[in-house]
Length: 596
Ligand SMILES: *[C@@H]1O[C@H](CO)[C@@H](O)[C@H](O)[C@H]1NC(C)=O
Ligand SMILES: *[C@@H]1O[C@H](CO)[C@@H](O)[C@H](O)[C@H]1NC(C)=O
Ligand SMILES: *[C@@H]1O[C@H](CO)[C@@H](O)[C@H](O)[C@H]1NC(C)=O
Ligand SMILES: *[C@@H]1O[C@H](CO)[C@@H](O)[C@H](O)[C@H]1NC(C)=O
Ligand SMILES: *[C@@H]1O[C@H](CO)[C@@H](O)[C@H](O)[C@H]1NC(C)=O
Ligand SMILES: *[C@@H]1O[C@H](CO)[C@@H](O)[C@H](O)[C@H]1NC(C)=O
Image 1 (cartoon, helix red, strand yellow):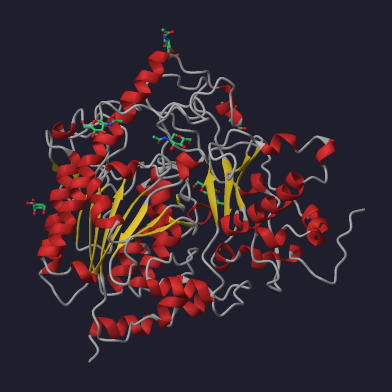
Image 2 (cartoon, rainbow, N blue to C red):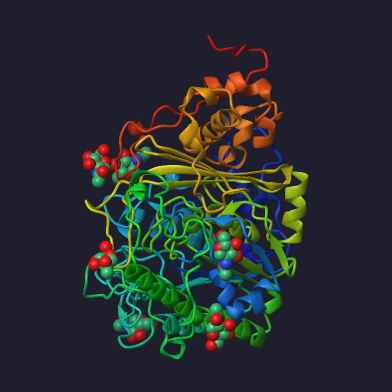
């Protein structure tokens, strides 16, 4: 027996092949979400799994902030799989969430800031994404979709009625200017009314609405549900009646002081160093005095304490699903939008928006059907873009365009599939185009804003002994860190590149490879985002950085154009980012690449 909605889905599921025929699309066995949606169980009468998606705001992985969340540890980490090398595509809320909601890299959404002209909910809709995004894809795949909490910046009490979100049965999005006020939340509703809850703790209200959505969704047992729950913790507190004030996060009253004995990790090499580090404006930062360090410590405690209400939310959700009898058929996904520096690393104030590990490495924990229990994956490298493609795959939800994501091996069967297809993903692209957001109250860069436009790469091939971070700034500066020996990113290997004694050195050779991979990824789309080495080596002989490091390819890599910008701008303007990758640059075994 085929349910009507499912029949429609099965019919739709053959569509993506028409759209994904890019010239690069040559491998039938790619990990494309839309490809895989075709052979998933759209036709079986088995009910699709439920998905509860919990996304916090600005939570780092690097300093193990989920370590203080004991329910997350007990109910998700121990009962599911944690991914230690999970990343944000762009270290800023709205752009990162937009990339997730479209399963596309930021250079393909071109949502690059939190506000106009380069970002926000109105621009998201202007680009037409409101008609084709995760909620509509899931709705078409037969899901009951509900979402509460923060969706993205620029949903305001004034514009939400005019720009209603599509694909959702019910929603209660946090609305600006109340989004980041811990004690004055305001929410959207499907009939356009704004619901104000002054004097109530934002995270707790979001938890309450999320639980109600689970109850409501369960009233239709024939339909699988997707419930998104997005508390604002541990984001900075921004009182609704102020502008650009980023205060320390406010914990729920019951959690005040819970971490009053926590101190910053002063043994990290990057902790408030005597000698400046990094590049661009980071190199200009003054060393912090004791007053500032004390303030950052308080700020850090506020972050950890504000996470405890998020932790309780997770416990309530798991308990509710258990009571409903659907815990075993539901995926619970816990993640965040971007990381955060809150430990005075590189002399910084609290904040995000850079490409250092603190800003981009984020938590991902998943439990659910066929998800290995207690597994900590320390090597697979994935991002929110990949996670979105994976959710669509799990939901057998086709998309009218080829997404950029690879499938995160959440389940045993996805893990097996990754193995057949040559292993899990081992690289990640981070992009950024706007001024840096420096939070807290001290040492705001002057003049402000500072240009922070950059592109960055993580390559993690630990079994092969390679683990690197590579960044190119719009200023022309470059950074290369060997993450094996320098996890705090304090010794920039790129600083030796221009000296003639290193022309044929390992670092110079490494640089040409990292730069080539970044060249492909910076304009990748679909297949080329998933298999960038294949764009360069169409014969499949080079599958990773280790292969690419072979001496025989030195001249080929040396001859490729390098990644650069003609100047710094706050948005993605293509002409400033030439040259670009083109398939004519692919390696050809017949060609001689000897340098003139
Ligand atoms: C609109 O929806 C909200 C939330 O569901 C409800 O409280 C309110 O009464 C509704 N208002 C109207 C005019 O229907
Ligand atoms: C802080 O105090 C709590 C209990 O109040 C204790 O469990 C924890 O170990 C302490 N942490 C440190 C770093 O002293
Ligand atoms: C402090 O940082 C060092 C170096 O990164 C790390 O080895 C250590 O585990 C950290 N200590 C704590 C308590 O997080
Ligand atoms: C510490 O630095 C902050 C920020 O630069 C400054 O406002 C403050 O006056 C300094 N305090 C002392 C005691 O020097
Ligand atoms: C940022 O870049 C723009 C364009 O190159 C330039 O005009 C501006 O002065 C830069 N701002 C800072 C603070 O460096
Ligand atoms: C991105 O959007 C901005 C502002 O809407 C626009 O100026 C720019 O040309 C777009 N970039 C690309 C590559 O489409």
